[in-house]
Length: 178
Ligand SMILES: [Zn+2]
Image 1 (cartoon, rainbow, N blue to C red):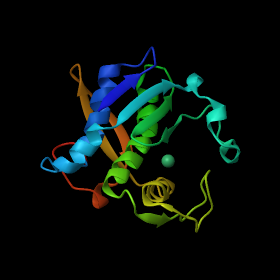
Image 2: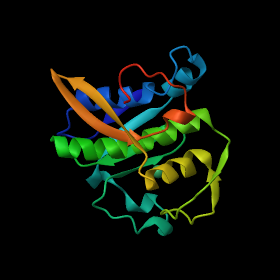
Image 3: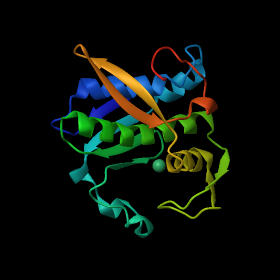
């Protein structure tokens, strides 16, 4: 697995540790097949200002440019975050990054399953059928289902929140989710 940054100000080590904490909390240590799948992914953390609007289709142009967000594709994730190094932006950026990571994890668990959107989102309307790894995350985000995680870095504890998908993945549950 590759984690790349095009940001200038973020503490890359802190973000890497935090991402790995979220990702590997969802795999059982002996789940080699999924861990191998996970290893094929590339995660790009980019500055919000790098976002290219022509990459997106018309229907989602109502997304605000000022709000960090991401895109999850085939074995690659693009996360667009605020390139500011403080705890407030860390929490906000990790929320965005975990959103994309949660799509990735569910895609590894449920590559072919279909799901139903329960609430309108930027891509569709309530009742639409789509990939489960897409609908389930957006349903849970709408319902505010998050889980708290912590990362340790340079003798400090950092907290962040990610979409709660604990009940539909393996439960590694070492010390991170609570
Ligand atoms: Zn999403």
